[in-house]
Length: 514
Image (cartoon, rainbow, N blue to C red; front, top):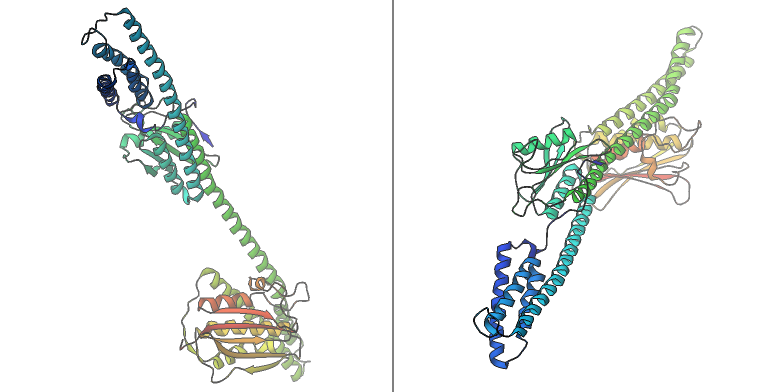
């Protein structure tokens, strides 16, 4: 972060409430305290005839020093000495002193009051400075917490403007640069509006990388003091505080606090930039991984059916005269089987593309589970060949509220997975049921089951078996099934059987009458 400022030194910020009292009011109250002390001394003198009434006039000096500072305390010291002389030293009601000893009494009263006022005023200054430091620390701590929870550049700018307004007790603004290089107020606090001259001054500050004061060169009509902020990620902002045209006057050296707030702001702005970069990197990595997985699926699993179809057509063309009817029928069946497998793979790729693009259109209607199962079994017939399929879906099962096409595709994908991984001659069951207002259709096989954990198997291009011995496919079946079911308000659950022989996948959807 590069914050271009004047020489950074300690600054003055919002003061203790006593400091904010106008000087005339402070002096007037000091005079009233002397008058009150004089009245109290008269009453005390009439009641007790005490010889040390001068000590009463030290009290307003101490109070003025603690409350208002050195000036009002000194005024109280002088007025107290005069009042003591006028009302209590003979000759009374004159400023003459008949007894020389009383001259020393007045002198000691004045000196004592001055010393006490000096000590009290110094204590007050230290207390006010401590209060200032505590208030600054609290404001900066609040800013740090706000920036941690702020979302976006505008949130960081608003939190920074609020901190500046609290620190300086003046209107504050933070301007950010948009994509077109124009400055716009992203955060404002403490009231006040930016004039055309203020905007011109802010633009000059950002271009020149130099701070400027309100009412000074180069834009004399501006009311805000501006400082530029440039982050390591080359993001740019301008901090503005209206402190030059105030009744209390411009703080002597405000740069230190502005630099701290500017540093916090720069970190917050870069945090958003870094987060965007990280997100972009993750998206790029995920995209590259998807491309690699897709290429692996296409190169490995689409090559076999294409090669088989090509070999079959070439054999029929070249050796048609030598093939008998049975051989030709066998070759054509093989080509048809591989073409169907190829069509299924391409269909899965297109379905996953629709899911990723959010282009799946769902049209739900009441559908009979038996019809859904029968349609899915027909679609997966090639993958289920050589397996003993038991369709136990009840004809009287309650209808489910689904998009029939999407549900059948999802169920067909689950059946094809069972056919791929279940050994030849093994049994595959398809059953139905209802539970908690939802209907379900499940597929159970006698294959090796899912590797643990099961959840990653629902990711795209995830395969249950690795290496060259795995069954053909793209690894999209379960991912597509889950995507289609969730689009309809349903869900897909998978589990291994307790005996370790086989797995079960259940597709659930709301009942039509629920």
